[in-house]
Length: 300
Figure 1 (cartoon, rainbow, N blue to C red):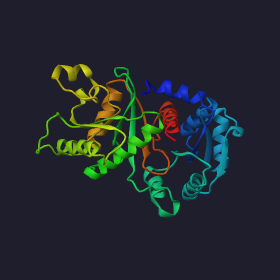
Figure 2 (tube, helix red, strand yellow):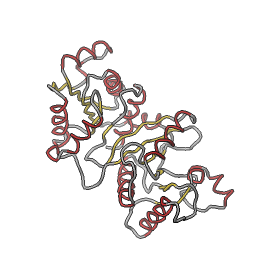
Figure 3 (cartoon, one colour):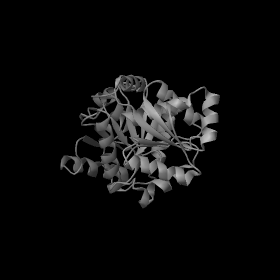
Figure 4 (cartoon, rainbow, N blue to C red):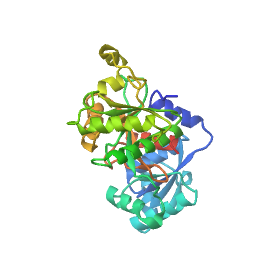
């Protein structure tokens, strides 16, 4: 199965009976608050709002939303809000976490604290989903925001994180393109060597439930026509579900280039913890945050 675009995914969630519960930490942020309340209005998710109750109520009133449509948990400060969010997750009373009026570093420190019990045995990594009209389905890029220069084993774990997440979204046996500048293995290009090693790991069963190709260039990963012209044969060519970039700079440049020059829509979240963690910038639009909620809800 593949997902054509974000709108199809949102519509599918609207038809579902179970609404996921999103914990907004620092609910005093009006853009984030508006996004979760719009998701509630569209019957996509139920908001649990952590922050100063009076401030949150004031923002809800200004935005024209009723407090009756959300659960508000009064929190004296951010540290208390993080602990309460963790308690909700661990008690099975919430499904994923969203960043509001809180610094990313502060939130991640809280996620990492042993007593909050939100870690798994895997590293955490970021998935950025791209919806671009020139491609026939949405695809994900890892990692554009969290792991600066992942080594081979970290890349393996990033693939594992992504495959687990994509399967929850209904994408079984995802096609994974491990990116390099060309399809040849070149010892002078370390990412090409890593890509080949990851492909061998999948072929030997170390990496499971996906098809890994690499090294592979961007054009071959997303264009069947380019692959045919080059005579490149692979089930991943022109049909990739996941692009694994060599480092955070490559991923960041690719994602921003697609958005600002290619007209792509994007949203993403951190995986590898017990639940998805939405880390969208406070400067992100309400629409971006809304779509992040859609994606995270589908991955729970």
